[in-house]
Length: 121
Length: 224
Image (cartoon, rainbow over all chains, first blue to last red; front, side, top):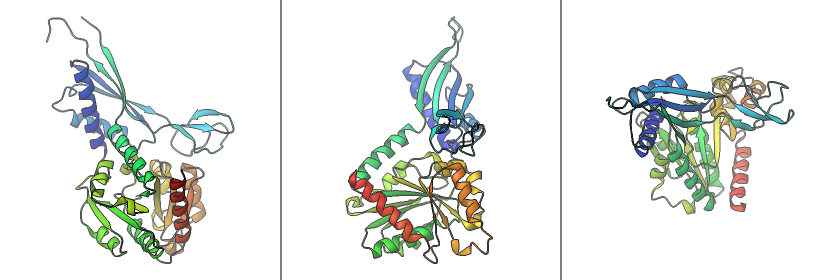
C-alpha cells in the first residue's frame, strides 16, 4: 500500500502551493498518473481521502487523469498511444519498441480553488 | 463573486525523492561506484543471488557491500554477511518499499570511496518499489522459475523500469516445467530488448555472465 505514502506527499505539496497562493477553499485536486507509474488510481483516491482529513483538502474532489503509455514506433516513425500496458508494441504495425515517451507520470497537476462568495463564509 | 480559479502546479509528486536520488547517483558515479537496485517479489531468491554475487566479487578482490530492506528482522543481513562483505539492514517497519533517504541514512559512515559495487536489495514486492529511484545506476528485476512465466505480464511496471533482468533458480526449471523461451518472450513484451541473465545461485550458472555485465557497467562509469 504505497499509495498512502504517495497521498501524504500530495497533501504536503498541495498545502505548500495553496499557502503560497494565499489559501482559500479547494474544490478539486487534479493529478496525472501514468499507467506505468506503479500506482493504482482507485487506491490512490482512497488514500488521498484518508490523507486529506483535517486539511484544507478534506472536501476537495480528487480528479485523476490517467496517462496512457506512449511509445515511439520506429517503423511508423511517430509516437503512438497504447490501449493497455502490454505488449509494448505499436498497435498499428505490431513492431515492438522500448522507447517509452509517456506513461511514467506521477504529478500534481493543479488545484481548483472554489469560487468565493462575497460576504459569505 | 469570483469564479473558480485553477492553480497550475505541475509538480512531480516524488520530486524530493527524485532529486535526492539524482544527487546520490552523481556522487556514486563520481566515485566509480556501481550501485544496483534489486527488485522482485518475495521468495524469488534475491538474497541467495546477492550472496553468491558478493562471494564471487570478493574472490576477485573487488570491494563490495550491500544494504538490504525488509519490513522486519535482520535475517537477510545476517545471511549476506556470511559472504564477508559489509552489510546493513534497513527495517521499513511496514513500508512496502525503500526510499532514497532511507538508503542515504544507512550509508552514513561507510567509506564509499573504497567500494566498487554496492547492492541494494529492495523489499520483496512487485509493485511498490517501481516508483522510487534510489540513486542506482542499474535496476535489476529478478524472476524465479517457480513463479511462472507470466509474472512480467502481470506486473509490467516493475519489469518496464528495470535495466536488466535475471531468471533465478534455474536448477529447479525442469521440476517446475519452466518454459524459458516463454518467460524471455514475456519479458521482451514489457521491456523490448532488455538483457536477461539465466542463473542459478546453487549451481553458479549464469553468474559469470552477470559479473561480466557488472564489470562492464562499472567501467562505463569511470570512463564517462
